[in-house]
Image (cartoon, rainbow, N blue to C red; front, side, top):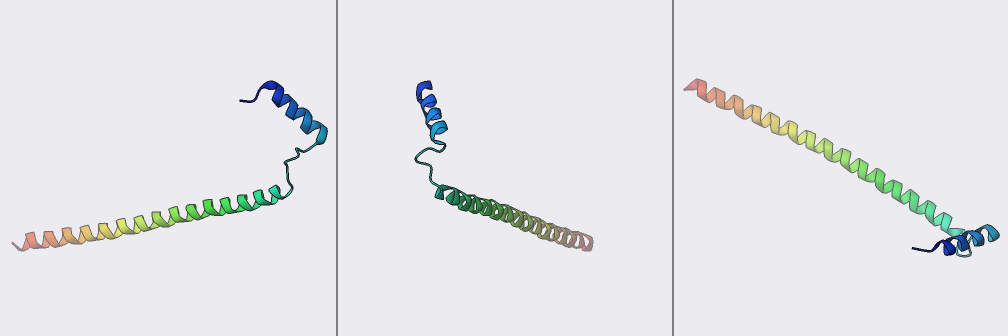
Length: 81
């Protein structure tokens, strides 16, 4: 962890010269691009989660219908005997 003297030295340097020497203007453009890509990834993940949820709901409906059909068939077989 930097000492207080080092931190105050950085503050003086930044205040005197406004921006640190290693600050580059193209970093802002790279950051904007990175931010857009990150937001697109988050949106894509959200869409995938929604699609998976819909698939699971559809699968549950199909399984429920199959169980109901099996139950009806079993009741008919029992009634016949």
